Image 1 (cartoon, one colour):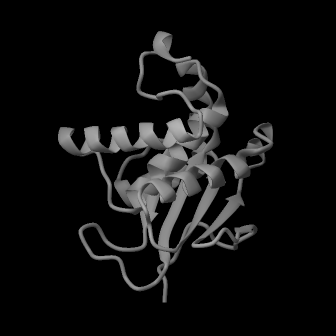
Image 2 (tube, rainbow, N blue to C red; image 1 turned 90 degrees about the vertical axis):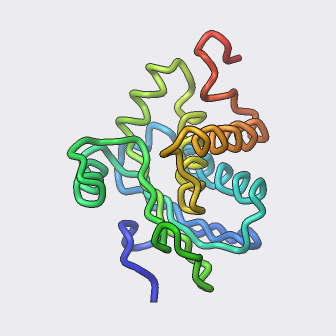
Length: 176
């Protein structure tokens, strides 16, 4: 039996071989990004291909700042919104079970939009980056120590390059 998930009821399923990606839109604010579901699915598929994951199931919840603030407070003890949270099905450091379900990713609209504007990049590019970042967390990647952060950033850059998205870690004036 899989763990409870913030995704709740599932609405859409991507039947790409090997990957089942459900995108649940929980905030009408995401209508401002009409292709948001397509963006996150493409980002996850590119990431899965880059890291050669076995067949997997996951959900991506497109929500708002108030919802992600509540999740951040409940699960991380931080009473503030954030851009993306990942909820891996397997506890940290534990081997993935035989179940293809790897977890959920929640992305907040307002924080994502605000960061995209502040960083001078299209919201779709930032959304793809956050989806990739969240997916890598589901697989056990993290950025708590410098060495791990550098490895995760290199992988994110490589995946995003395949999606024709400029390096999200490059200085603003260096992005094309």
